[in-house]
Amino acid sequence: MKLSDPVPATVAWVAAIVVPHALTALGPAGLLTLRTAHQRVAAGGNYAPMIDRGAIWRIWTSLFVHVDLVHLLSNAVAVWVLGRVLEPLVGGWRLSAWMFAGGVAGSYLAHLAGHLQSDGASGGAFALLGAAVVFGWRYRRDLPPADARTLGPVLGAFLVVNLFLSVVLPFIDLVGHLGGLAAGVGLAATEGLRPARALAILDIAWVLGSVAVCAYGAVRIIA
Image 1 (tube, rainbow, N blue to C red):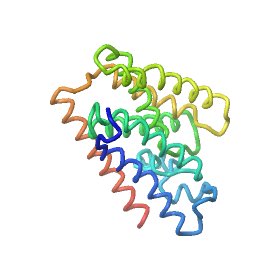
Image 2 (image 1 turned 135 degrees about the horizontal axis):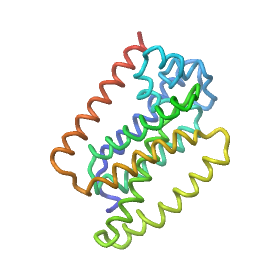
Image 3 (image 1 turned 30 degrees about the vertical axis):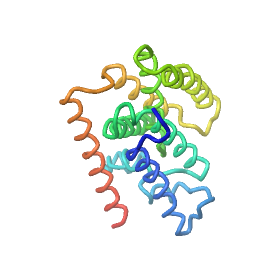
């Protein structure tokens, strides 16, 4: 894994996280201001009453809604760093499949836990983090020493710190983070570095289906 390795899916994900927040800043919500509950709902956020009435697409679109600039940048940086580590190993389709799986799992679990609102890409980021740590452990003898150290002990320690912060900081959605982490760990534990053709097709189908759901949600928001 080199810094020069192309990571188009990672770049696309960072853009997908940053651009919606920037676009909403063109309206009453400035780039640096805290998004109100109403503004987040209007942007496609995870809002329990609407999901209960059938707006399931919000489970997906809420991945791209963030509370403020700090929330946005923390998730964008996490996705960038983890994507640079994972995408050269597993490819862009699989990275994207894991991002959507973790984001949707975290968002839906938060909904099931009774959270009124739960937005952001942190569920997806936790899925990537969990997958990276699992791969670092499973393939520590197959990877170059520096990569194995990064994926294993370094990111493992980072995971422990983030879980601790998720527990002690009341404004962080611990349930959403745990849902994303469980999805990433589960997927990485049951798949190899290079999946079988059938699994690769499932990755592509899941990503394209998720993009379609987000596109539908965007149309509903604009309309």
